Length: 377
Image 1 (tube, rainbow, N blue to C red):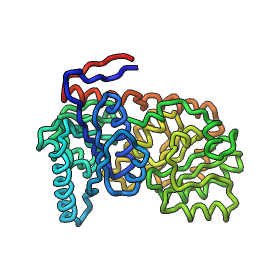
Image 2: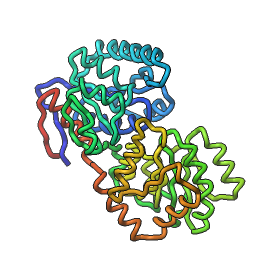
Image 3: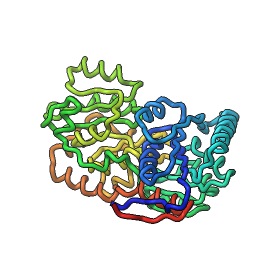
Image 4: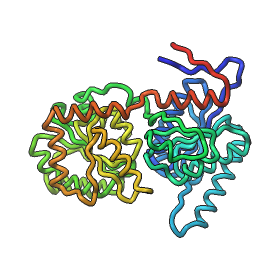
């Protein structure tokens, strides 16, 4: 397998990755960080104080973890945004003055913008990764000041102006690049080994609309012999768990799982939002899905993400406003009952899986900050 090796007469590269705010920013950032560690780089992850970030990095080793204020732009709160942005910039610049990075990579959202600007002010090379088909406001703005942008969806390239754009795909953590035996994964999670398994999930923080739609659809699905793994998010966990008990449903209900490779590996079909990180993990595991885009996502980007997958046969897409429990159960059973339908979707997912995405991004960053060579182990 190709491996990047920095030229021996150069100092150890120091890379900062701003990836806080959501699991969709954090987990791809972790994947790139893992690849940079393999290149003997010093890696600092810049995360937010949010619980999803703090919990996810508890088991991370080999990388320095620093917390910066979360920065979000919401209607009517411009002063709060400006204050949070300036505070984050000052903290990042102070951190970088102590240990100046050679490069700063932002994984999306306004939380990543202050570290990029702070790094740029101190001479670091700067990069961004845009995961969605429709770029976010922060990345549309940052594209004018960074050295290069990396994107998942090819159609995103023309929507970022002012910098070089490279289609690298979406980095996923290393555990999603390995084959997972469905029977072993089900048993590891406490599920029955043989029945087809429906995974219901709404992203790193759950999705109430999906949770309650699923409750209405699952009786028909379970009567057909399937079992359910339902990841509710923390907010809805107790209510959904109680609903399963009241309705007599047999299913494994959890607020979240850190072992998402097991969850996807155990599943026959998933019901999911259409965040780019979730889509990349579905593609890596070749797991057919029914995508229900979050209708109020910024610039409706989840709809465009889901549509790109659906138009290539890599998923089914259903808009939340048109969704009913009956329609959802019908789509689930259509995939579960038909090996032909299941195989066709799994095959189409191959075009959305970029197994070398993290390595490609690491290669470009290192080539920009110093000469490097590619060796083969």
